[in-house]
Image 1: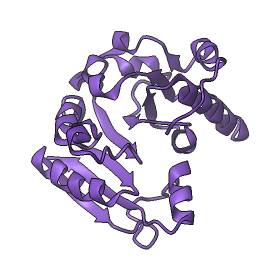
Image 2: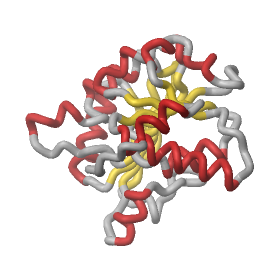
Image 3: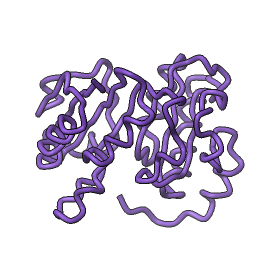
Image 4: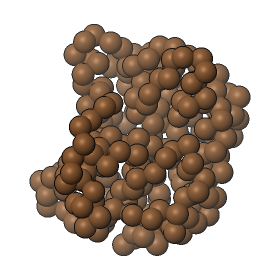
Length: 220
């Protein structure tokens, strides 16, 4: 998603207590960023405006979350959405780390000691052109990277509107040694997630009559 430059985003992020300016320095030690370091650690790749992670994290304060995106403007909006959601629920923001990083280089900031239990990938770029498919966040190349920091039996939750991306991803997960434990070609009719939180994209695609495809995969 393209978004206009927002000059306020970077200063606001750098002033935020839950924004991590230099994530490389936390590699192998992410748990100690949080007030409750013994909580399970989950990760969202491509958090966008933060509507998903703000609701998920505020509803599950016994879990710590890292949310990553590459665009300052997106992260600035995510910061504000997180603050608004936590303020509505009268909660302190102590279980989210928001950071800017290129997901293709994710092994520079995460490793096995970080023990990530679950990854969320929601409506990522489908990269439909053949020469760009390796950039897909669910491509075998990327999944092999995630295996380097997922705990044993760690999970990936994936949602998309794109048929080709979904069908290809089923093969990617198998190639990378993951087992798809549940899948649906119509999430509205077959809810495979407990308390599914709809993203901004999800609501938009549903309003257009586009079926949401989804899966759960476990590292074997």
